[in-house]
Amino acid sequence: MSQPVSAISIKGLTKDFSVTLRGVKLRAVDALNLEVAEGQVYGLLGPNGSGKSTTIKIILGLLDATVGDVRVFGVPANQVEARRNVGYLPEAPYFYRYLSGRELVRFYARVCGVPKASLKARVDEVIAWVGLSGAADRRVGTYSKGMLQRIGLAQALVHDPKLIVLDEPTAGVDPVGSAEMCELIVKLKQQGKTVLITSHLLAQIEDVCDRVAILDRGKLIVEGSVLELVGQRDRQALIVDPLPAADLEALRGWLAARGHSLNSVEQPRARLDQLFLSKVSRPGRPGGGSGGVGSNEVPLDAKP
Amino acid sequence: MSVASVPFSFGRLGLIAGNTFLEAVRQKLFNFLLLLAVGLVASAQFFREFNFGSSELKFIADFGFGALIFFGSALTIATTAQLFFSEIENRTALTLLAKPLWRAEFVFGKFLGVFAVIGVFCALTIGLMIALLWHREGQLMVINPDDFANGRLIAYGDLLIVGLLQWLKFGVLTAIVLLIASFSNTNLFTVVTGFFVLVICHLQYLARDQWSNVDNVLLAGTVRVLSLVFPNFQLFNLADEIGQGAGVSGEVALRVAGYGVAYIAVIGGLAVYSFRNREI
Ligand SMILES: Nc1ncnc2c1ncn2[C@@H]1O[C@H](COP(=O)(O)OP(=O)(O)OP(=O)(O)O)[C@@H](O)[C@H]1O
Ligand SMILES: [Mg+2]
Image (cartoon, rainbow over all chains, first blue to last red; front, side, top):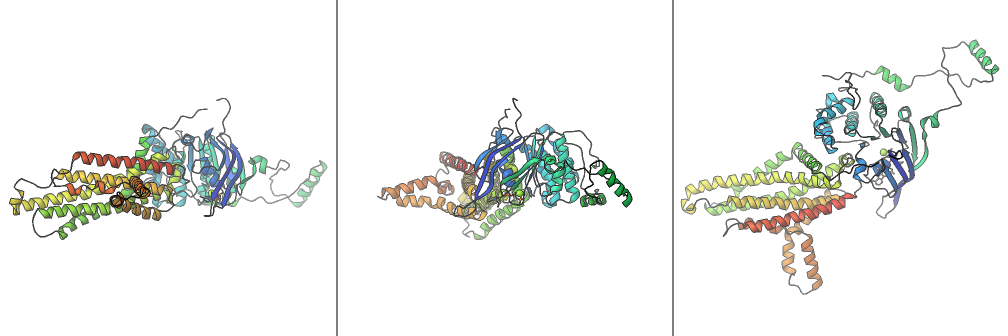
């Protein structure tokens, strides 16, 4: 390797759809430039209809770019080779209802060329990893929305791809489930995977992403590392036990004497989702499990 | 950094075919097929002429093949369109085509899956028909031994060959419907157009016979071109040769089979070409 290749490189991407019979065009993506370096967790944000899913489909070769150059690990996105190292979870995923979860993951594993010898172990491993062991033999047609997202993640990971593209993986998933989804994404990052993710739940994106881009009507309006964008370098927060009014005044005076000012005094609150997570029990999860992809970790609470 | 190329794989093609077939099995399509085949062949019993001669056997065979052709065509068009659009409408094609997979593998995988399903239907119908004929022939041999002085009359081998050719014809029809589906947006449009083309393919020989001696060069040329574009389904119908003279000629059967395979290859290729740039 002479120079590092971006996991995803998008240059001057424009995508038009013809939406009426008279050939009126709708510009879904407008002159987009984006680089996702290897090993990053990258968030693609934007309001409904801003072109996130369209961009993702072009990256996966499901749509053709009208103008522009899109490459995945240096390979043009419309070539079959580009998809070798990519796992994809579509938005609102829907799978073959007539297969069981295990059969489904197995089917995709074979399509992706997972060697016969390691097939069974690998399939069981990813199913345990997304916490679906208990429901693996049920028909996918009977799965709930959250379970569909999990089995979708399993099929995206089964061939151990380097790049994982997740289109709204937490849509329709309860707070416990989406917190677990975030944990899984963090684990993927620890394994050195590149993750491209879209979501409307900005708080979660903020927690897991290294960089984010915000699209609006197909145009890139903000891009940068999360810290750069929302970190307030000129501010600092001190969390202390409740202070009597007199002590607070004294502190103010002490700070003023040193040329600092106390800008605000607030009561810190736990976030509602943290409250929810601490109150709601997790044992009801089918199978529930951890154990990293490609590791020999034993799932914590998987049934034997 | 160089990325290893992904060669065309018959393994993946087979996987998709297998999954398509499995869908038909799990959606209980086969229960319906079995019912249909049994119903068809059994109803031949009720329609038979009551002159207790070898002509009754001919009637059962004609009825069986007529039913095979009619219901087989309808089934082929409906099944192909359904199994193709279930992938598009349920958006499972999105996940599948995002894998390192050639679109050609997808199209020909679908083709083989449907072809196998239709094969099961043909096998059921023809198997039942042969069993019925064998049984009835045995009965008639006892009642009218004179008619069967030289042993059994029915050439069962020929029945099989004719059945196989019909199956191949349904294969051509499958390829045609896949080609329509590859650019069509709806299941309904595909089915309706499929039936339209089916009728043209069955009747095109009439047009050719009618217009072959027309003076107008342009018209004659157009008919010629059309008769090349649309395969002539009448060619596959060798049922009338059964039990006549030397029976079905192996050479003719082979030529017809070659004709069918050639059309499947060309139309399938066109379907891949048209599907290649389809936006999913
Ligand atoms: N196949 C298509 N034909 C025509 N227009 C389309 C097509 N797909 C998407 N669009 C349009 O392109 C624009 C961008 O859609 P896209 O699905 O990329 O948005 P999004 O950012 O993913 O939105 P959401 O958050 O709702 O998922 C929308 O205006 C949409 O209507
Ligand atoms: Mg979207």
